[in-house]
Length: 358
Image (cartoon, rainbow, N blue to C red):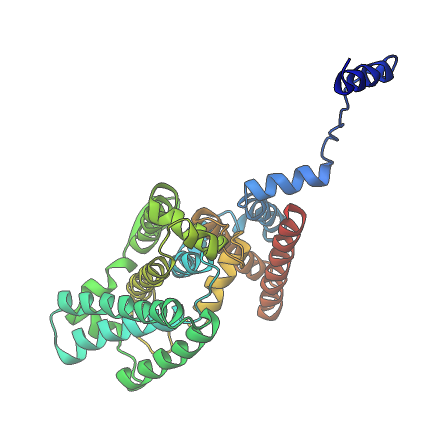
């Protein structure tokens, strides 16, 4: 017998009587916290939806029947229309792991261009309207080029362009407000989105609110049903992995910022319809309100996770809390306190979800 055969026989004899069971590893069922984290990670709009429902229940008790009056509910929708449109633009940017501090300035600059050209300069309103939209698009393009091609941090870029666009607002407008009567006489198209449809029971809905919903549906489709939308999520989640997968991340960023700028220009049309006039001081808090709506709506500040539906819910939360607190007689100071607390809570929950899922 060869040495190999002898060794094999000896090894087999040594295994006789040994335990023949196959090793197994028990899989422990995830605990309730882990299951909750998984659910919230899979459905990021769940938290803002729950917060909205809880807020409605609280203010129903605190403010009584006044809160659920049809006119008051339609008023909340009108109040959040501008925030909602700007929030959609901001959502696109934040999904790429960036942030745009200039969305409010772009909106006001576009409204100034529309109003000044149509009313003061005498340019036909159709051309003025198109040039106003082009202003927002160009502003967004500038932001995108500086972020993608020059590779500057989005925060720094948009902080700088916020100041630049704000200075252009003062320069072009000459710090003058164009009155509602003048716009109505020369360029009523600019105020059209402020027109409303009666729904019964005192409730109304403006064309601006309808346009907000249309924009939300269009952007939702882009994000969820097109390659460009998937590229936005991939770029925000891991830009290097997206680049290695064949995605042109620079082009994606430029297109995203340009689209956001165009949406901000549409928001300027909504703004004119809402306030009736064209003012360099219009909607000063819109920028921060838009970021608030996006963050409360479940979009992660670190990019790659979020939705347009969540942003609209976030805008409704902001409007609901402010309206409900006002009806309950709470001072404006504490209304802002409540909104600030919501932001901190939303970011804390986002950090918790990411920490557990990593």
